[in-house]
Figure 1 (cartoon, helix red, strand yellow):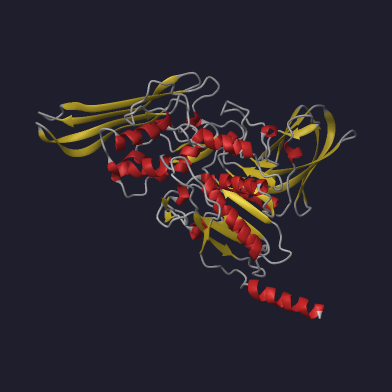
Figure 2 (cartoon, one colour):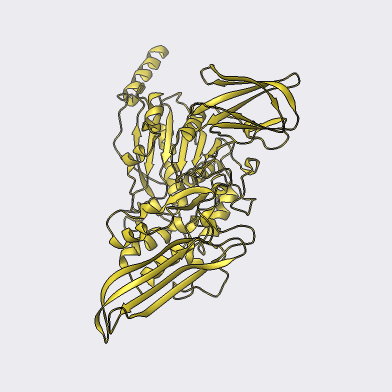
Length: 557
C-alpha cells in the first residue's frame, strides 16, 4: 500500500509541475504580506510586483530556480521580456538566460511595475520601480516563499541575482528572512554592480534640471527627470550626494552650508545605517560583479567641463517689449579635485530686446560643489558608468540638443568601492583591496564598463559560480602570499608578484576541459609578466619549482 501511495504521489507531482521544456508561465502578480512604512508616509503599505517563470529546456520542471530581480526603473522601461533580452552579451549575442536554461535551470524574472495601487487599501499609488527598497524587498520575500512552495521535491537551492538596485533588494530580502528565521533555501547571491555604499549622479546635473523645473525657467518637459528620477524614494535612499541636502527654502538656491557630498535628508543616511546594521546573508555564498575598474581607471577628469552650450529657447512675451527671442546659456562642470571647490552649474536666461543682437539677462543661477580632503569629486571615480546619451529617447528636442552638445558620454554611477561594499576607504579613486570586501568572491574588470553590462568575462564568472566551479578568494589574496596574481581577471598578460625569487620555474596553464594551453620555464622575480593569448574563460595556473608547488585559478576577459 505504501508503495502504491508513493507512486501515486510521484505521478501527481509530475502532472502538477512538469512543463513543456523551454515553456513560459503567464505573468503573475505577487503581493507582499509584510507592509512597509516609508518616511513621509502616513501608514505602512504592502507592495506588489509581477513575475514570470522561464522554464528550463531540459525537463521543464521547476527544480533549479534562478531568481532575477529588477533594479531601479521609474518608468518600467524594462518589462519582464525586455529584462530577459538584457541578458544578451558578447559579439555573438549569446544570452545568459538561454545558457542556464539549456543546463536545466529555471529563470524567474521579478519586475516592479511603474505604478500600482497598494494591496493594503486599493487607493494609495505606489511607484514600483523607484519605490522604497525595503518594500520591494518584502515583495521578493514573498516570491522566494512562493517558489520554495512550488518547486518540486528534492529541487536544488535557489540562486538570486540582483543587478543594480536589485542587488540591494536581494541582499535586504535574504538577510531579513534569516533574521526572522524564514528559510530562503538559497545557496548563492550574486550582486551585479549594486550600490552597497551608494550610487552617484553628478550634482551639477541635479542642480541644473531642478532649477529648470522649479526655478525661473519652469521647463515642464524636464519635470520627469526631477520628480520621477531624482526625487523618487529609491534615488533618495541611494544617491551619495543629493541636491535636496544643499538647497534652501526656495527649493533650488544653495543654502549657506558646506557643499561636500551629502545624501537626501531623512532618506540616505537612514537607509545606509539600516543596511550596514543588517549586514549580508550568512547562509548563502555572496559574490559581487562590478562594472567599475579595479585598477583606478578614471571616468573623465575632475572639474572638467561637461557642457557649455547656448540653447535657442524660442520666442516669449516679455513686457513691455512684446514677443522676443530667448536663449539659455548653460554650463555644467564635473566636481573638483580633493579639497577644492568650483561652480558646477551656471544657467543664464536672456531675451533679445530693442534691436537684434542686444541680449539682456532676465535671470541667472549658479551652484558650486566642494570635494572632501580624502577624495576627488565622485563624478570621475572608477565605477560602473552611466551613459548620458541614454537621456535622449527622441521625444524631447531640448533633451536631444543637450545630449548632442555634451563633452563627455559617461559619468561614474556605481563607484567600484560601492559595488564591492568596501566602506573603510574614503578615497573613491583608490585601488580596491578585496580583503576589505565582505563578499566571498568578486569579479572586477580592468577597465570601466557601462553599468550592468554583461561581458564574456563576467558571464563566465557568473556561470562558474552558478555551476559551483568557483574561483577561491585565495586566488585574489593580497597579504601573506608566496606568489599571487596582481590582477584577476586578466586580458593579454598575467602579472605574478612574489615574495621570493624562483629560478627556472615550470609554468603551465590548463583550461576547464583539462587541455594544457600554455607551458614554459621562466625565472620568477618579485614581479614577473607573462604574455598570454587565450580565449575568455576560466583557467588553472600551475607553478612548480624545487621549493614550491602552487595552483591558482584565474579568469581571462
